[in-house]
Length: 548
Ligand code: HAS
Image (cartoon, rainbow, N blue to C red; front, side, top):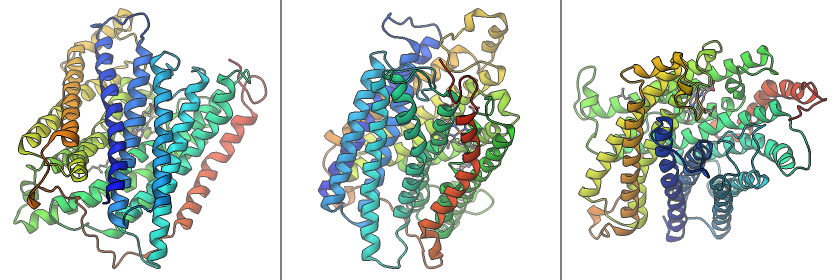
């Protein structure tokens, strides 16, 4: 890809890893506070650090990295950006960055200790919500740039299906733009007027519902770029083609349809929404599991086809033929393996009754560490190992590859220890989002920590290993950006791995976005129109508002 586009991608990656550095450091502080091993100075508190950890890793690291990957992939598959597209993409980057810096300042100065879900009636400085709005606007500008680039390609290639990477990027962006409408509505019309004191009240249940209208598709905004790498990059690394172009596209279409009308599954224990609407959204949640099962099927098929081609025999012969010595592959393979229990845990969460058992416990914290913290993060690591040297023209030296292996193995061990203990503690009843790590020595809580895995030591050891792994990753990233020797020989040049995908049998209507946007909007109206209107008109307290 061209030098200008490379620069933009590198800047996005650079910011992503600065957020990663601060965010993982806050994670380390957190495990120690939860173990009573660290006393904080008066100006710093647990919720401040927890907010920084959640926002910088789950929101900021992911967003910048995702746009870096999208920009690189779109430039690679559709051609270099033109001046207008470039301008929008840079503007998007700058506005997102300004929002990020403002939000970080607010959090660190203790004016926004509201956690990444910023539930009312927790209130931050009005400027924090302005910062969040800027982040969203910035991502929209970048999204418009990518959509513009895609439209220009479509005009040049009338009647043709776009390359798989571009199709998947556009699907993810459609999902993102529709999803953001919820968070924009609550931030602009509810939080900002309330936080600046222009109005006295806020309709809490409405704000939570609008947040989760956005919050669930947000997790697919994190997941889908990882799936792009699974569908498009992985087959190349194992030496085969995309298993089925139509299946891959159809799974992304299903995400557009079913990711959004499901937010109530985060609110199953909340009053104010009737069981009927919760049940409807639970059913739709089970629909959004289908494209992930299709993805699992497709991945196993890819491994099996490539394994058999290389001479693997028997039921598990394919496994022995996987390129496990290639850290770009292994990192993503472990990511996938994590998503098996991660996805199963999601299904448990989504099961209306079982949610009673796990909601608001450490189980959920365990769940999101083996979804976003491992499958998504480890896929980004796998991408990082080739994307940066591809962009900088540096060598991914043998020594760096060894370090990368140590890094991903330590991340795996740390995540396994920490998330297993979080799942167990959650099942025992340990609540999440609390600074009272010992639960004030309450007798019934003391037993929780006597298990082999469910004890303070495991969590602390897990957290520490993760932090060391994160620092190792930062070292590798800095090296690949600035230090590693330039690749002079052709065989040292790092490639952008994109597998061939046979589009000859793919139905054209899969790329008719208006159909999918139309169906998505219809489903959203069905799942949300009546319950949201109920929340606006029938909220307890004064008409339409709960006063805090
Ligand atoms: Fe979730 C809460 C339900 C997926 C993230 N989720 C959260 C929160 C986060 C999060 C951050 O229904 C906390 C929010 C908060 O702060 O309150 N989640 C689901 C369901 C899925 C799911 C049904 N979640 C994710 C993903 C996330 C994520 C993905 C981030 C990226 N989640 C919930 C629910 C809650 C929740 C409730 C609220 C709980 C509460 O009460 O608060 C599904 O999408 C999962 C489907 C996935 C699968 C797995 C397919 C497996 C694949 C891997 C194949 C492996 C291979 C490798 C090929 C069915 C694709 C083979 C290798 C070998 C070695 C064998």
